[in-house]
Image (cartoon, rainbow, N blue to C red; front, side):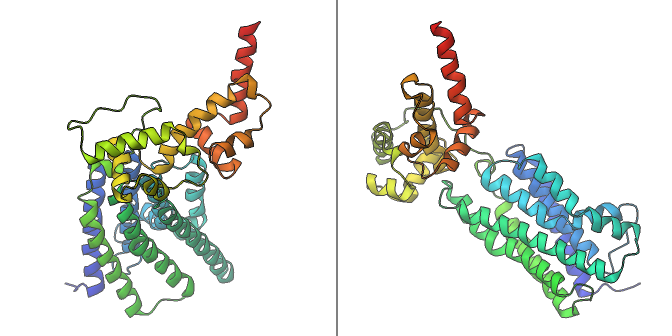
Length: 357
């Protein structure tokens, strides 16, 4: 009986851990986008661990083509997972199809054993790895860029973990494969890579298996003007500052250009981490931008539907509401109404004209 090498044994342990995490992901009913993308990311790592080991690769001939394709999708599924967890949404179908198509030529060459000139093959590999690095870089950007806006402390902490462990490890793997394109990396380097992935898996399993539904499921933002539920124990410090916050926003403080949660906390003289918890837990918002946009977009809709402001440029309305430029305003408005500001104005002013006839 052939004895397993240390590297192969560690790979099998990591594969078992990843399969367990994938199963736990799929078992939950909340936050399906994050759970499904997370499960497929885990499965892609399993596929990579399988295909990159000479002792394991080829031992499952019936599903080897599927495993080969899945192993090429690690950076893309990492990116999908980042979008789903940190932005609370699936990307548009175009991005999903583009990600799948990116690995298709390499998959066809691998599975079909297509004879390709080594220079062309190596050049294609370099292009493919650079594309993977770009995808990982964007996943990093998603995690870092959205952290100041995130209201859930556990997810804010997970962003740092995600950047420090998962994405940097994926980037390291791609860099190694890029440097050693067309050659075999030294044995010590592949073993080190496997050990780092094993450590990453153990570190990932602990927080992932204990995450609450709130982590995955975006909070449902109430409409501006809705009655906020009365506290069970009125008079606490949080209740007092909740009332101060709502009054400040009703007075129009949300129109402050470049308003951040830090500025708002300073204005209220209230610790920032407690303000984050208040807006998330008591008012039901996933991030600070959603909180601000509810007030700003409500104002924008009133202005755009006002016949007296029909000649006011959309840019002026956006700037008056605290947006630094037109782009963020347009995106926020369309996300809220499924229309551009101009379309909304045209529809509502047209309705007013029809009603007056």
